[in-house]
Image (cartoon, rainbow, N blue to C red):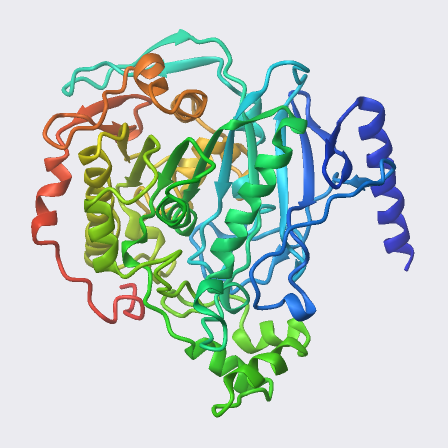
Length: 529
């Protein structure tokens, strides 16, 4: 009880400090008090964007918050909110991807990081970022996802590419600082976000993806109060977060809200179809299964404590890859079959917003079962090619075919501060820490070398240039060519850990995509040796 009292006093103290420092914003739900987290960054943490999905709202689409007419309504936004219930996997990044806040069903919140001081008259471009985790895990409070470096460091001295495909020599110059606002939100995961029950109307499925849309709608109404421009939002994400960002441009092609996309290692072609097998297993475990009346069984599950449902998903802390606690289903609204996705992409049935997209060179190294001694490199290469690179190449082709500005990259680096096993290549998630600047704080800590610092500065500058001006920022400020599948326009980043980039012919990586290696049906369960 004493510790709870101390935490309450500390939270109030932070809120008072925030108010005195002017770290406030006025939303449609009242005044928000934030906190200074860096001498160049303020943060507003744990801001609700929808009603808590608890009780009768469990297994239902997010409901918008009501506006308040109480001018005295205030909210302390100085600490991260709870993360959504997790179905966690073993990860080569260890606890760096583990959220540092408790899990809860009441988890639909946003974190907004703004540069300080904020201009009272100039609205800034915004990155809204969606975490990955196979739609089963992920949380904005994980150390890997700390964006303070990105928001504070735009940029100092950065590296610029030479246009020659033969040279990797880099030279430096100084750019003016591009101020951006970074926002990350939590969305429901596993069976809480994707119950896939036939008792739920088809237009109310895939709750986690609908949460993401609800967050964008809340931001459209409130973003200006934080200094952000609601007409200059870039939606980005990695893995399942990138899948989601791409999906939203298909589902809401006439009103995407966003003006740009950053897709890191994720395209929705290989999602689903999913059934409700996980929900049935959980329902049986908690005594709610009713095969004759699925709606009755679902109502029963709404009365079960959320923790009991979570425990029924998995009784271990870390799960092997290939197991699942639930994932998106084909509803032909937010998600289509792979065949239908190809048809929609080919016909341009998506929002025509500029895209920055790419993969890492060894995606499979971070997305398969592994041991301390290594991973099955043959399977890793197959997964990198067939599951990640070829769908990314196809999505890039869809966009360019319909005159959408596209920049495509391949991240090659294997930097020590983010590489904790000697057998790891440029694995799935390896680029996140460099893009956000969180590489300095990962554990076990390794002091970054000059080339890693320079590479991170370069990557952050590229991201910021795109966020500031999605239609031409990368070409004007970074010298990147628009992607053309027939020319040397694929940006190869940091080969041999050199803080430089070169432009490659996409065929170097994509020729195999005409007949990609088949993914073994048991790839997720095979031994890592």
